[in-house]
Length: 176
Image 1: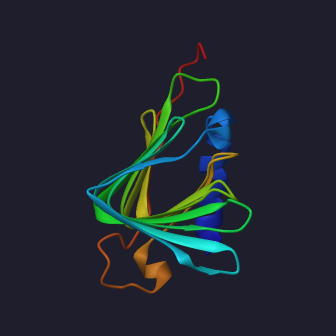
Image 2: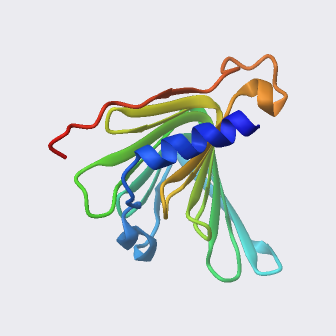
């Protein structure tokens, strides 16, 4: 675990401080799918669950998530938690004030609009420019671009394909 934290700190320090497109949070969320169900009648404690199946496209500003299935939970305050599954789920979001995107892929992704965090599970990969991280699990905070990467051995999933964390950090141009 100490090695993981050191790797996270080294990677965090090597990245420029920026965040995901701030304006995305204020934009409406759009979903497209082959079919959908909305369980508005069974609202528990003010929450609503919607299920989208087949070629799902979730967009909110520059954030885009593609999946086979998305289950969306919305609380009484309007915050949304989406669980996307597929082979593979992908997401992409523009970095704030830059002409660059952060992209990710995994078998399952969970997006939380309240915390501005996306978690990638199984065969997880996150890419920004030419820098890339891979592991069994990646937690990515979209507000401050902090991420944590865990291999399957650390998560106790010995049979997972990503037993170890892999990180590629490209050298920075001295002119920058």
